[in-house]
Image 1 (spheres, rainbow, N blue to C red):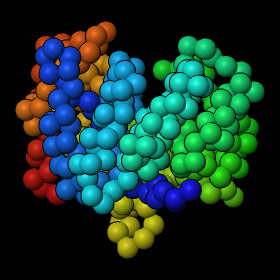
Image 2: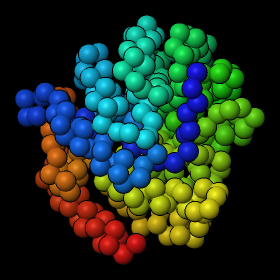
Image 3: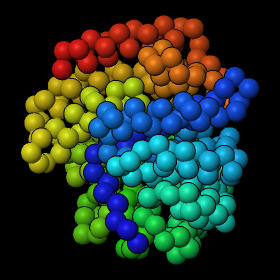
Image 4: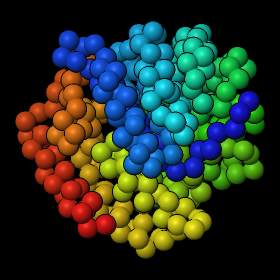
Length: 302
């Protein structure tokens, strides 16, 4: 199995659609190249932000293939999770064949497995697919936490190398970080607003929604927080304070509704979503316009 560097900023990419619902692959390629040029450390297509729930299996693979072929020097981590273990294995294997460098696995949603079933689910995928794997804990979407003890057990598997933390509970995330410190296991923030505290606790990066519209600033904040040559915590703290209203604004409606609208307003990309998601409300669009004005001012001054 090849290694996967999980340090830095990994934008959770949107999937652009035409107004008839077909995937706009030219825009997807453009987005991937723009983000790579901005200095991000990897890309994450076909996740929740990429509306994976409404993509067919073939579309999943086509999106991954497009992003893989669009970039040159950064890893691609494909979202391949499912509430069906066999389906997750199939999507994962097909994404490996398409060139993905790693996979992101949301915990089973709707089924609400008990810890034993949760662990068996992830181990079955890890045993079946020889590629670095990140487990994704987002109980607000799935209805279940991946418990700390389950995470400890999973972290010992050679193929399970990371954890996307999106529980919103900093105490719980701290326990995960403390309990897996001895493993080859990276903790990535799955919530832009929680990134700085997670990094301070020992996290290594973020799978970021905001990086789709503020890649340079997000990278600056993250790398200024991490130890190393670019460490400048006072600068990171100042940036985080200025970015937090934008982080929050991108969740005024269900993700990815606001980020798609923000990308449309900033880059003139497609704002279209697949049902059951719908365009942002007029009031929230005005709020996004204000936040994008603040972002432009921040980009000009930094």
